[in-house]
Every structure is written in C-alpha cells, then in structure tokens.
Image (tube, rainbow, N blue to C red; front, top):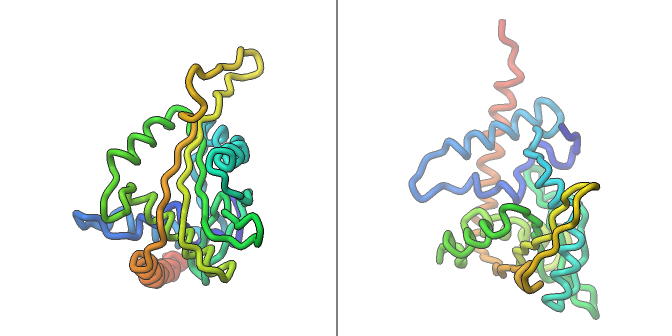
Length: 230
C-alpha cells in the first residue's frame, strides 16, 4: 500500500468514469468505487492498485514517451512526474504532462501518456472501435478522464485549460539483462498515436455534481465502518 495523504479518499481522474451512470443503468461499479474511497479514509492509506511488469515498464518509459510526443507534435510539454493536483476536498488528478506556450509558458492543455506493451495495439483498436459520438469519438473512460484532468488543472493553476492529449507510445520491449534487445521493423511514426479531446463544460459540471454526491455517500460509509460491533 502507499500512503499519500493527498490522494487517499479522493476520487481521481483515472477512475472518475466509474461515478458516471452507464447507458444501461446499474450502480455496482460506482458503489464499489465509493466504498473503496471510504476504506482508504478509515485506514489512512490508499488501497493497493494493480501492478505488474507491464505497468512498471510503462512507468519507466513515460519520460521517453513525452519526448517522442513533443518531437512528433511540435508541442512543448512539461513532464509532471506523478505530481498529484488536489481539487477541493474530495478529488484530484495527476496529468502526466502539461502543454505550454513556448514563449509565455502559459499552460493550455493536459497530457495523459501511457506506454503499454502487449496492449498498445489493443488500446488503439479500442479508441477507434469503442469511440462514441457523445464522448467526442472516444471511449467513455478516456473522455471523462480527460475532462477531469482539464477541470482539476484549470482550478489548480488558475488558467482555463481547454484541450487534452491522450497519448500512447510503444517503447521497445525490455527483455532482461541477458537477452538481445528487440528492434521494431516498422516506421517510427507507428509507435505513437494520440487523440485530442476538447473541454466540455456540461460534462465537467456533471462531474462536479457526481463528486459532491459521491463524497456524501463516502462519508456516510466512513461513519458506518467506524462503528463498533459487539
């Protein structure tokens, strides 16, 4: 488990979509997420997240991915390196990067970059095939993550942030100390792709309302979990 007081108990951008009602209704995922946040408050630490060799690989190559994105897009990006931005008392986000005006330094976009290994092409297919018009032709979870990152960064830095870059980068696989490195036999342009998501005020207002209501339910659960059973 980790113990970052800025994070535990807060609803974060990467999972904020769980609070948004699904097209078919149902609250199981939402209720579980709210309960997890209540447990974090009672325990005083974050619940353990999923980790594996693949996630560690992705984290290791994030900076390389930011550099590749800047080279391909021509944008200036400040790498955030896991800086958690608090949003009020109940939420927050960790953009992987912030796009800046190269002359004024003003921030105008957030960046979410991932370096999946075996899932790189699967995620590209997901972005294409599971895109929804109501989510700016993106999958639901990526759309709301983007809206949350822009909302939080705008409040934190005091500037309107209206654009988000969803970036995926394919780093060469790490085969271990005693294996020959793998060289991709393809054009480097295929190793990176990104999707631009614009700020949606209606969706962001929806998230604000969902966070407020979910925080009330979370706190009610905290009180229940703290009760003594005899």
